[in-house]
Length: 240
Length: 118
Image (cartoon, rainbow over all chains, first blue to last red; front, side, top):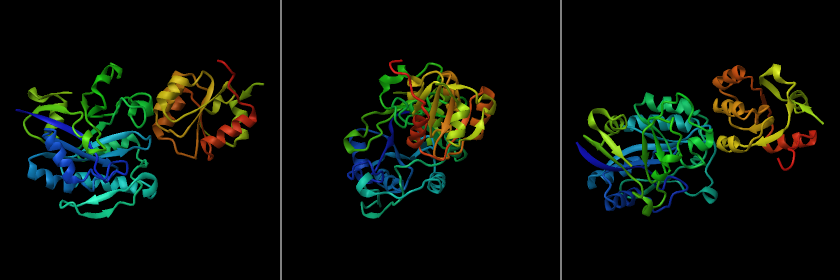
């Protein structure tokens, strides 16, 4: 087994609130500079820049986990990570069907879709900053049906964190992990919550990439291996 | 002046989804909020809670804080699990087509006020 330093929650210039500098190539070079082995690409309610990041990362020997940060009906942010583009884009299709409104670039920012050569191929006109009308229970089910990981994002933040929005983690909600924005906040999460913790940067600008990371001891850099790590299968483990 | 849930339901033309047998409850004041953690921290016993959240956790919060009722705004539809849990716990859920601001305004006009300095 090997140690993999992973930052599993990074935005790109597709997210209206992220810096335009967060192009696929820049994200990958910054990840390389920060010594990350694995990056998770999670734009708000969309995954359209994942393929360009993957192609750039392949050249640099960095593994990409394609994902999305989906906003549930309750305005809880869930990081959904997948093992295949097919699963990822099938969730994106459902998210799009349940996401209403049009982006206003002046108010919220541009949503830039880029190809692997750093050429702008389009702008998403969806209101990616908005909430879907998918309940959190349904969302976790949809992710699991596609063999993805459902991780509650920044649980230690009030806005859009599951505990802030819903008071406590709903009983029986089969989350795979909780993401801390700051690992020193772990003590603030009630003890009865028996879920694994990870930490990620939630980077919206280049310098924040890798500011937080989780180190996984596992056999390979894949979503399936991360899943095994989260449940500690056969000596796999992680530290934040 | 005491104001019951029934008066509120009738005056604001609310759709009563659960707790039909609890409408004689006296309302002590109100709290409006969509962050359940904030409601847990600040709502007071007997308050009517105005929110757009429809998740089952709302019932647990209303129960824990001994709130009088939940008023759902913007005509949003509660999850089945929420309605089931609310019936079990005896928490009235009432729905208004109005926004939070307008519901609060109407409650004020009715005389639903929080006592000061509590």
